Length: 72
Image 1 (cartoon, one colour):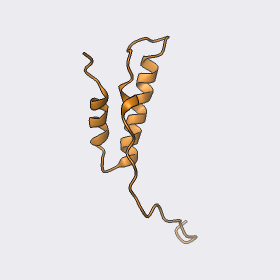
Image 2 (image 1 turned 60 degrees about the horizontal axis):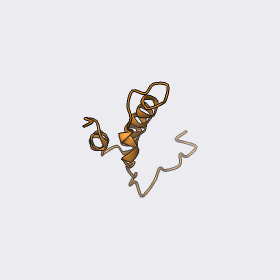
Image 3 (image 1 turned 180 degrees about the vertical axis):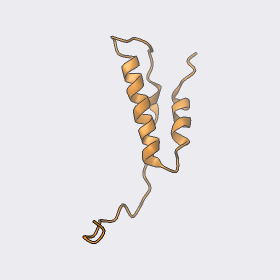
């Protein structure tokens, strides 16, 4: 049985729950590693556990304010 599964990726993602874009960056990086490791050239792993983990939604309702000329 594999030790690094989707639940493992979700735990790593959730450790950055206060920073949703950082959490998503972790999932994206792990996906890239497993994509490389499962390629025919490498053949290190047979599964892609990060594929099954959803990204965090950024719940910022206000978005980001536009800079004024004075702020620039």
